[in-house]
Image (cartoon, rainbow, N blue to C red; front, side, top):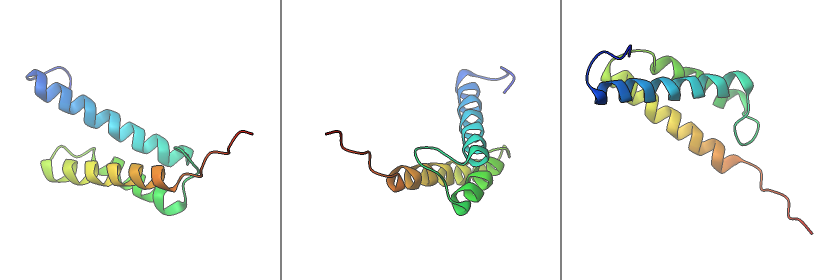
Length: 84
C-alpha cells in the first residue's frame, strides 16, 4: 500500500484500509446511524480484523461482513421524527 504497484493495487489497498478504519471506528464509538448493540460492535471488530490480512479470502469475507453490518445498522436505525 505504500504506493508500490499499479494504480489498481493502490486503490484496492486504500479502499480496504478506509473500510477497515471505518469498521473499527464504528465498533469503538458504538454509533453509525443509530446506537449499535454489542453484537454489531463485535461483528465490526471482526470485519476490521479480517480486512487487515492481505489474502483475497479474508479481504472478501471482511468486506462482505462490513457491508452486511452497515446495511443492518442502516435498516435498524430509528425513524426520524416528523416535524409539525
